[in-house]
Length: 339
Ligand SMILES: Nc1ncnc2c1ncn2[C@@H]1O[C@H](COP(=O)(O)OP(=O)(O)OP(=O)(O)O)[C@@H](O)[C@H]1O
Ligand SMILES: [Mg+2]
Image (tube, rainbow, N blue to C red; front, side, top):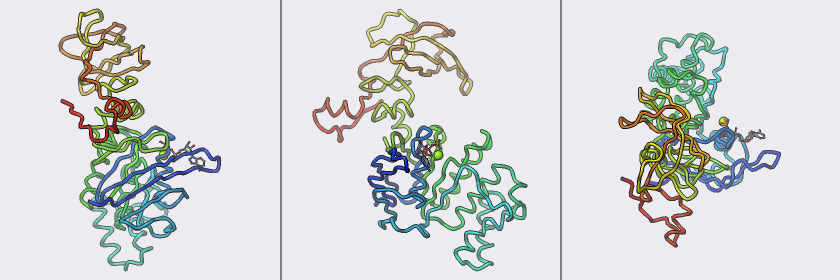
């Protein structure tokens, strides 16, 4: 299938000339939800603002084969922010019909479409209320209805749940994903939360240093990061200079146990609970890294205990650059088997 959204060599700096987006490229299929995850300040909001036509930039942006440069008017792209930014003096229904009014849709039709959309986000009972009479989560649902009612070609969501508490966030993100899938909306979802990115996206892009570092299914990114940046930011495991070992391939043994495998010394510096299971936080001084590993039935380590992590050569996923050198080629066609 042809790419619906195509960004090529996007470069952006603000007035201070510091490069924010550095030759960034990205593509999306029609109807796809793509999550973009990256550390704070890496340029995620800037990317969305460029796509929405709110910022100038260098490089090419195409939607459905059409160049977007110079089309600042009705791009068919809607941007949804962290805060819902509903019009405070309008009721819920008026907020949702507003975009349709701008599109000169007749009143009867706008009210019908708005009511249908409010039903989808379960806000029908609140249509006469003003934003200040709603909770944060309800306001975000109205904002989503307002964004979707105009049937945008592309919806850009900039951390829309970050101001909500965890239970509300979990509830709302399920809603939002269901509605986006049902309406077949092409959407770019920005977050700095890895778990939320995996939950929301059909695919996931890791952004850093002004670029998209790797795009793929979350599972692939978590065990086969292409470089140290993705490994450190996204994947769970040991980051070596030449490659990466996913947590599930590491075995934890008491320090000093005999083993033929490769060994790395560490110390249990803390423990926490996740889904009722004890998680060890292990400091690995040699790599200046702290990793988390679930406890096993076999061993019960206490805080402050020295331990050994063991793995074999086969467990290492080599970074792209290293694979290229090892293969003496570009490494592009190599199939990585991971059992
Ligand atoms: N209008 C502006 N003028 C100058 N610099 C800016 C402007 N807006 C953003 N920046 C800078 O661009 C960089 C990227 O900012 P951006 O808001 O895109 O990051 P982000 O990835 O969205 O971060 P966060 O996760 O914290 O929202 C930051 O260093 C920021 O200081
Ligand atoms: Mg931002």
